[in-house]
Image (cartoon, rainbow, N blue to C red; front, side, top):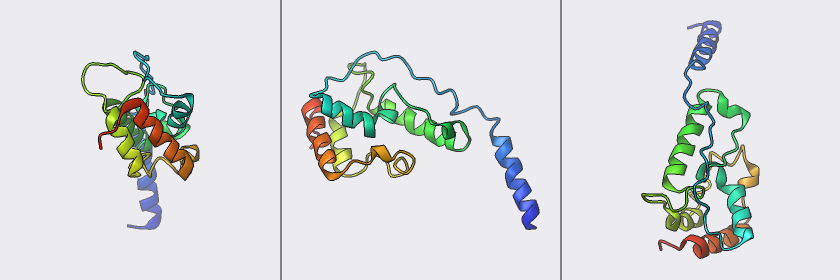
Length: 143
């Protein structure tokens, strides 16, 4: 296929996938329960690094309205809120706060794909240790 046809086909496909509405509602459900933070500092660090996927206070950047990034963003937020959501503390079912410490400790969170667009979420070693200690104090440790 010629480069021009390939480029035109890619542009047409990109335009066509914008019709798919998934990932563009950007609704933040109401807060039904607040996490029992051990300190304002823990909450501050959590808000910097975690709240977009693990609370109902997601900040939806402009690129989260453009497919296919909108799809990936919506999936990450949906899964993040389902597993661990500080805005629905005390909800029925499991809210995996005790696993939060381990995911931060092992570097699984915040996800590597999140950090380039959210440099504020990259914690230095001291901040990471502060967050880990605060998460243990707030939610426990599954260790």
